[in-house]
Length: 368
Ligand SMILES: [Fe+2]
Image (cartoon, rainbow, N blue to C red; front, side):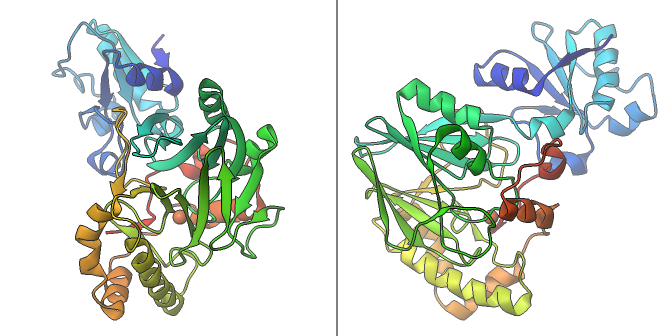
C-alpha cells in the first residue's frame, strides 16, 4: 500500500528543517495559484491520470531523504508515490493534497525596538493569511486568528501569557474567522470595529480607543476602504496591524460586495486611510493580514516599515482620482467562495464540515 503523510506531519518536518523532497505533480496552472515553499515541480498530472507507466521514469531525487508527492486532493499523488516507491524511493503521498495543506502554518518573531511587548506572526503558509499574537507582561491579544485556536493557546502557554483580547481588523472574505472559537476557549473579549454586519455579540472598538495589554497598548485607527469597517491597530508607537488595508507591496481591494460606484467610493476612503497610515512614525513596523505568496518556513516575519512603504505608496497617493482609477483598474479575480465565507463570518458560524472545502486556493484581497 502507498505510504501517506498527514499535512501536519509534513508541516512539522519543514518547520524543523528535516531533509525531505516535496514533489508537486500538479499542472502549471494549479502550481501558479499556490504551492508548498521549497517544493520541486514536475508537471506529471495528466500523464499520471492517464496511467502512463513512464510518467515519473526520469525523475531523479536525492536518495537520502523521503519524497512527498503532492496534488490537489491527494489521489493522483498516490499513484506518483507508488511509482517512486517501486523505483526504490522512500515515497509517500500528502494525504488530502493541497486542500489539506491549506491549514498548514508556521510562525515568526517580529523584530521590534520596543522591549515592552513581543509579537509573533502566525502564518497560514499556503493561503498567506497572517495573524498575530501580541504578548506583554503575562497578557496577550490575538489579531485576525485564521488557524486553529490550539495554535494560539500553545504559543500563549509557551510564553506564559493569558489571552485577554481577540481583535478582528474587519469581516474577512478569504478565510473563516477562528475568533469566536478562540474567545469561547479562552474567555477573552472579542473586539470588532463598529458595524451592522455581524449577527453575534461583540465589543465595539471605535477609532482612537485604546486597550491596555500588560505594559503595552493597542489603539484602534479606523481605516475604511477595503471594507467600510476596516480598522488598523497601533501597538505603542512601534507597530501597526493594517489588516487588508495595507500590505507590504499592495493595498486592499475596495470592490468586494460593492457595485462599481460603491467600489470607487471605497477607493476614495482607502486613499484617505492610506494617507493617515503613511503619516505614522517612519520606523513603525507594518504588519498586514495577508501575504501574496506562500510563506516559507524561514522564521522571517512578513513585515515592512512605514518608511519602506512610503517609498512606493507615495507615488500611488499623488492624487485621489489617479489612485481611484489605478485601484479600480487593477482588481484581481474575485476570491473563490467569498460570498459564502463572508456569510458564515457575519453569522459567526464555523462549518462542521471540512473548512478547507471553502477556503482552498490562494488569497485575493490585494491590489498591486
Ligand atoms: Fe479582507
